[in-house]
Image 1 (cartoon, helix red, strand yellow):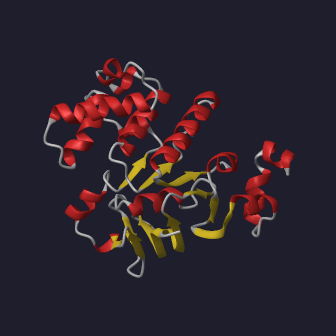
Image 2: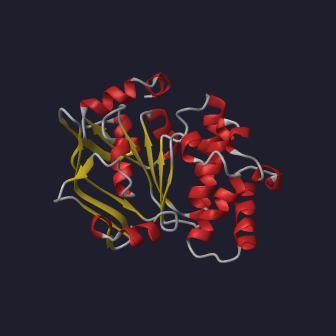
Image 3: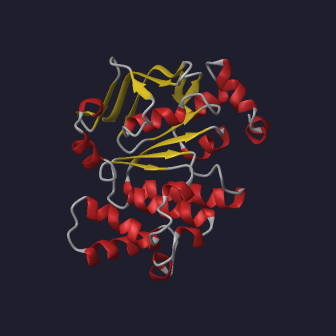
Length: 266
């Protein structure tokens, strides 16, 4: 398969008043077109920093090593101008954030926020943009899309807000979607619904997905390949079946043991 994303020697540091913390330490990996890959590891291991660096939205106190390379869609992201990156974000490369309450504008209707993705990327007709937003809301499970489009984020449940973020991320059919622990704040029933929705949309659109999680149970359901991260480094890169049945690294085995239902089926 053709490589869509190629990360080489990515290093990220966060600078505080008293010390500098190395969050990501020279990791390399690739994602092919249409592939669904998991990036899994414990909280604080560098998963989210990796995701934010790919979209170049790291906080101000973070720096990326000069030797780092991130090639996406045949373009070197780390050297692109900010206007060029803005053009890619949402159109070719998008993200589903972990906390929809903070990712959505509390003062705008969810329909307007979805439509704005199309407007920002060149759609001149507000009516056309709104129609696309309504179609996407219907697609992610809002049968009364026009009614839901008028609501503010606080009027929706957590699962509904997460569906809105998925609609925004997939509106323009990007080549790669980064899903950063999109179900961690949801109860088990809603989590299963969101995972099924992501899986269904990925099959329909063919977009590649980098699915970030700390839960190997989610990896088993969603992905074909897994990248295991520990203390800022990738310690295993393997097909999911092989990682489950014959993990090459002790940390992978420990993460699998932490999921009782997986251990019972091994």
